[in-house]
Image (cartoon, rainbow, N blue to C red; front, top):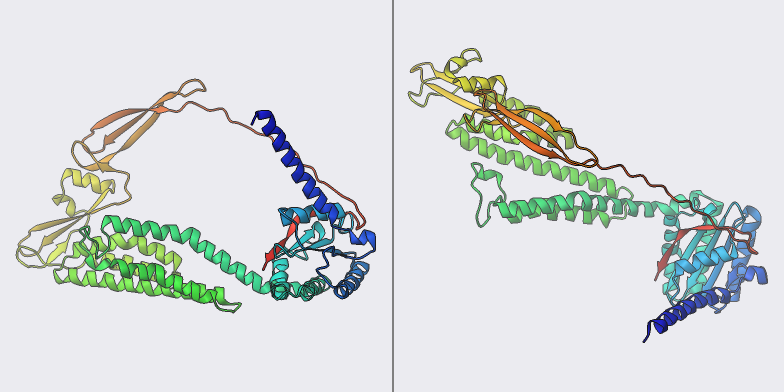
Length: 480
């Protein structure tokens, strides 16, 4: 097949598609233009009695409010998309008054088993998508599923009229739908923010040996803080999912609030269990009077309990301050000498300098390390304990190993331009031994800022026997 013939075939196919869509729209009679009826029923899906009843209701609505509602009941629309057909039909007929656009098209397609509400701009506030969906699902689909299209269409029209004539009815109709939307938003929040985090934590624990029953567990001085894999999954994954599932099945307006409260309470329980495991660790360390290990253990838990205190102020914000106080108590707790079992005394900041080296005194001065010096009252032996500042800007010096090495200078040697990169220089130095190291780095070439301008769009309008109303595509579709 030649390129020319392929092109001709594509043009012919596209043209046939356009003609098919156009002929479909033209085959749907505009009954309001023909005989004043609001219902187009070319395939005789609705009975004449139902059409007469609907016409009476819609004529009164238009007379009293100016709102126009058109109904089209079709057997099939072929391969045509129902949304596209509804938009084109709404525009072609011009349902609703021009300028106010207070129109609604109800399009029924039996073969697709679908009902479509297509609202004009002026009705989007009174008939939002969620209300349209609820009317279809609760008042129309049950009848359609039983093959009673007359009853379903009439029930839907009556409910629409009830909302348009009494806006308070929309609150009743949308109440349950909003609750479902709350559930959807709540579940989406959990999925977006918690699911990736939980998966990431599980993978980290799995491959780093952080579970108690890992095949190659990583060494830890605190085994009581580790959970078996199955228990972690039950506690962190399965129970929260079960709570959310249980409340999602409740037919209660307060279900979302109760679900959040239950999850909050469950989090309390897991945190109290963690406190219990922490106490087991402290008890084991107290048996050997290893107060230094207790302080280090509590120091490693500090940030965790600060975050938990902010997330769960009652009661864990109060516990956070107790945690800080307990850490200080154990740091200053009386202890016995390892040499003679005599009582030891902690020296103050002025006294302990006599037992610290020059590098240790520098570390204390710049607060990269805090030292505690204990002296035995009996044999005068000395014990020195150190506590690293985990948030210090200093690092161990490559030369003397003192934790006093830091960046002291960062300057530009050659400025970058739009045609060439630049050069910068960093200087690191040790505040104790004065060791210094210089290093250079490249500064990226400058990139001109780009600007863009947007285009303008237009709007389309139509006129017809209805009044020239327009639609922005609002509404909803439901299938059975």
